[in-house]
Length: 550
Length: 78
Image (tube, rainbow over all chains, first blue to last red; front, side, top):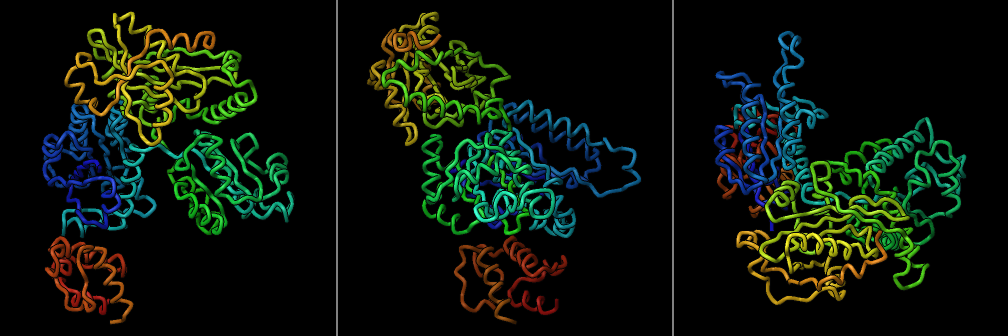
């Protein structure tokens, strides 16, 4: 079902399909009337996401207040709306006004109060986002973006070129709010991260260095490293002899990428689609989280044909355009970078090491006793709230009720009387895995209901989920609760994992939800009639993890 | 007017009025030929013509041009 989106502007927004067509695939778009910005926003349906397009130049004929005062007034109205509605607000703004170099030469900071307030809005409200139109249009130039003729003819200042730039930008931001960034970039080697063919040219013959095309390939590696450093995983899929490829990584003085930057590789003569599939299985990352970059159109098409879920990039023909093209893709971009994001590579290495250990030790659970598992409950606060939101929004497999909660919803939940929730921190001999699980529990009378339970797939196989059940039991006992109920709402991705969890012998399946446990309002909020319900059998979870966790 | 120009105009009409079943001969089409081609639709059409043919209509032309024939005449004068 498409979400509802309200478009609001300081001037007329042309409702043309050629402008908004791509947005209409995901959103049912409504256009507000032009009017007083404040009246429009204050009366706007609070249940719709909003995109506001505000050009300071549109207020130039309002003589009652200065343009900056007008802008500040708009931001004040937006702040009021953000306080009363948790729907997304994307503010696209331009502070451009025609230059008068003389009058403006002594007031370079005249917009600082506006920009400071915009920054505060971003920090105070997680559901507020911005697009700086002047920055977006800078590449085209102002005369190609803004039109006085359009303004006088139709009350709409932007040109078609500007709309063609803005609409996809809006789509990118709104899409990113609703979907996770890609996780892994898989690269070819020959003529992709270096010029030439290592098998033919040898290490001294490939183009990689300080000048010309070699510099372009090196800068491309630099753009790849920027992604690596913000949490994107890197893989190699190359038709080559493996030792020749690693020789370049280890010994070529101009290589920016090192062997240790690569989390997974398939360097052989198999087809690349098969190799990508193997990587997906090895890392347990869905193919829809993969991005594939190869200079060879034949290889790209082969992957597109066999693995349409993989995003196969169509790079520009000119290699010198690749670094900026990769940066502009935004496939891996996110609004925040958490400490867990920065440590992603180590986390996956730990996971692979654990899987390897698991497969080489005895088949019973004795190996879990050997890896010094240590888990702790972490209170949810403003410092880790973004991680809590990330776990709620992005976890697909171990997500018992498929509920996605924003940071403000999580905050509201744990502040309600009778509710509690925690993040879970995990470490073992394979490393510090960080905050890997989130659970939220509401209590009423003598029943505790686990409203939400999410756990990262990186830490599967450690019985952490049973340790968490044990901790919920302990917390609930302290509150005088005698019955702990879990809800289950499986999806295609979570079904197998959830089935295994509830069929572990620790639960009894209930027919109906115990009505006294939550208020009717909560029942409506969380759509309880869609769940299956399970009650925990007392103390079994503790037995399951005894001796495994410190 | 060249076939290439007519072909481009047809493409523009398809994009601007996606629900309009275009006739083979578009020369006599005017505002009101389909539901979407009202004054707002006419403005959309003319801005698309500007973009495709890299020209700029004056405000007077935006007000007065309301048919394919007039667009073609204008293109001839460019």
